[in-house]
Length: 436
Image (tube, rainbow, N blue to C red):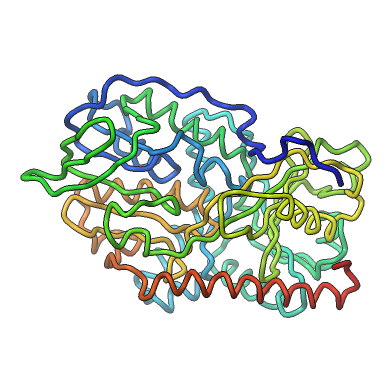
């Protein structure tokens, strides 16, 4: 499997969007949203459901739209959270846990309805998602998960080894969970579609405009940026794993992981028939999981846990290549054309953070691999709080804002744990006869 010379670039960004020039930074706004990703832009849209007065809602990002996780993810629209619905009920009680399970279980539906309503062209397909079990133990865990969702009338079912192999084009997995609520899209086109509609509604979006400081003001907040100050009644921080210390605890509310992805050249007709013949996006259950799909132009894209850094090298590329060939050895002669990475925010509670550290200030982040669906859904929840909904009445729990204890230690532990899990996965693969 060869690679092109300019391989270290993001596939989704090929259909690049030129930055839209906006007027000078306004001096006042009803709400300033920091972060132009899925959460930030869906918040802005929910705050301007019809049209907005000029400058009423402002979105600011230190990068360009789509430079962060919203333009770099795998494009898998997966409902739910990492925790199973029964675990949510156990944590929050039946009265709050069941509505929460219903909300997160409907997150993918929310995304696809939003795309249809707004007319966003992003290759969206709500045709399902497979979670493939790498072992009998993992299969039993998926069976339990499927049972919990089925008890809540969700379109989730189990596939046996033969059924899974027919859809996957490989027999290395022991079965799979099929979630028909899920789907896929082109993430960069999706985020720019949200931005385009937001602008049409009067939202001003400022790219490459870093927020340097937040200060409490007599009425609301002063948002200090590299291009001027804004007086805001409300501020929303939606910067996820790209957060700066606007609040001292902010970068310490989660552990940053990196997700590493690569894409092949368009597959031949023969390979198209062999690899993912079912056409569904997939995640597997290895400790260091792999997630993969085919694109609209017939490329194979795979992601896995990346190095703990933004810059990539040939060793990273080789590791993704090995992961691809472990599943589909027939890709040996297919060149890799793109390789990129992005940051993932893992909160300590294993569910996204929604918090209000001070009056008029809302923070939402930490999607842990469920960001396309859940970050979009979070926008409307944030907007409810901005518009005055009491925190106690939010379906999604609004929790105290605090740093993780010994956050730097957690990051070091995560590095060690990732290496241990890779070794454990390698042992299991060798047991089934896979090449190292």
